[in-house]
Image (cartoon, rainbow, N blue to C red):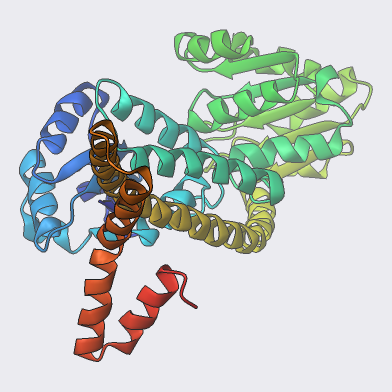
Length: 418
């Protein structure tokens, strides 16, 4: 039995190819049934995200196995093997184990250390496990990877620093305000970046959120999720004074928040400080706002500097994380190799028991027929010794005849002769 990982990701393939190799949730069961029906495949997990598609497999090894699996992947998606092969990577044994651990820990992600991938790996395992049997080795590999990812998060700072624009904006807010639980935040826009910012803020106990958007319907879905109030863009001027923090990210070609608007808001606020984070390109907030007293304006470029600094911190933490993965994968492979001996030990013990039982039955039969107990016991012990040492003796003789001193020494060690 061998553990394998086969796949493509953001490092090896453009999005145009990655999207053609994805497995949708609706087709996952069908794909798994087809994959597990392939000769020599004992178990499999399919991990499919926007940045990667990977197959994790336990298989019986044979020479052309890689070609068989690549052919299956290409045939399933109707792709040419020549188009896909140059973008595929293939890991076997300890490389497959350490690769999965790195993936689950966020070390192989587009954004180093991002936490979402662990949830995606867990879901892929659960989805692939439902209705399909896995080998114990494959199950143990995934469970071990989950614990390694948790250890990496606990023992390193790989996820501690903001490396997304939305997260950086929230981190900046937490640096300026002692507690976010008492502030009012106005989010301008309802796109992906604002969605992420809203979720981050809610996780940091922000109680009052206002979402201003051109269309209320689009904003309402997000507002329902995070418990926010929805207003139109035209209402920003009259509501701006309520906001301690404004985070804006729209597709407007012209600024939405002008210097005069902020001046009026600051006057109503009796010059209490206001943080404005403009992460839109083109900008949503007039640059002149940054010159106003008590108005702290940060652009996307300012956040990028924070992100780059934090990314450097994550790279340093990644070195620690790689050490953890190396240690844990080594321990797992030691366990896996030990499992391969379990069956051999079981067979050897069963063989010895079979010999013992056979001779024991013959000895009991001889005693029942009135045989001399001492003679019966000596005969059984003699035959038992001969039967048990027969195979090792032949192996020792063959190693000696072949002049194989290394094998001879291994046999002596295994028999406890040294």
